[in-house]
Length: 384
Image (cartoon, rainbow, N blue to C red; front, side, top):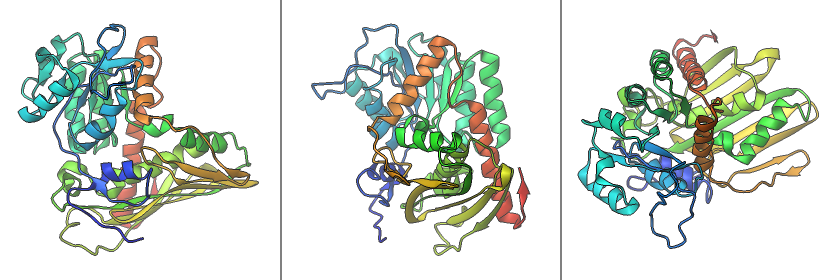
């Protein structure tokens, strides 16, 4: 498939456009910050305002005013039922003015990075959602927890397992919940893959494969800087494949082998891999093949079992999932994944139950990411 990389078209836009045409390039995300609250009233006047009358809703803070916040989380927060817009945090005054006007945010709830910690004094904010470059996740999750806020952290949770441990410890010490932004746990097609695999509807799984890739754009974007990203496409979109393998099987891998792909652009990929493939070994001898790349376009999750098969041929986008089983085409309603994700976390807080996507799950995945990289670098089978 031929693709164009146009301007700042990056992964976030790519994920959005998967609902229209798979394999488009992806959109860039800037590292500013924003605090939202969810609104259960769909705006019939097309004005980006919020209903602040329901004081039982929880205020949500998004830290990171990039493409994902503006293109996905912002709109989603107008469709949620359990939370509401509370304020913004940004280092860019112009962005603060835009969001203040668009969402009618009170001046007292506008923060910058220097005074972020004073968010502890704002009772309107219950949840901080960290949407920053990967290497910044740990700092802001810890600071949010110390400020007495519940936290959602975008994936990957962090760039090291040690960082994950610090994040979990900080939230536990504060008595606050930590959740990871794994939106696909709330998406019907991916939930069906989990049901079919875990309940062994077609018998024991015999083989799995998963892949997610797009063509990276701007060579100066933070995703290509290892100090900020922690790695290349594996950290960015390959993690979706890892997640898919785990929730489809209901198991965790016990070993991995991995191979780095050839680099065709040594300047762009001087710090991170351009592509890689890996093979997970699961209990019972099941092998799952994964692949990811910043120079191609694919998006799938497939499972073969004793009595049939099931797959998503468009698995990981913000919308537009497609799938089929041995018996025919899957047909599920389209949902706003992010709205369902945030609503579930708010409900978990209210009802004092565990989130479906806790920090411990994020830690597990960072451990798996690091095992893949170790296998890639050493050429050895790495026990997990």
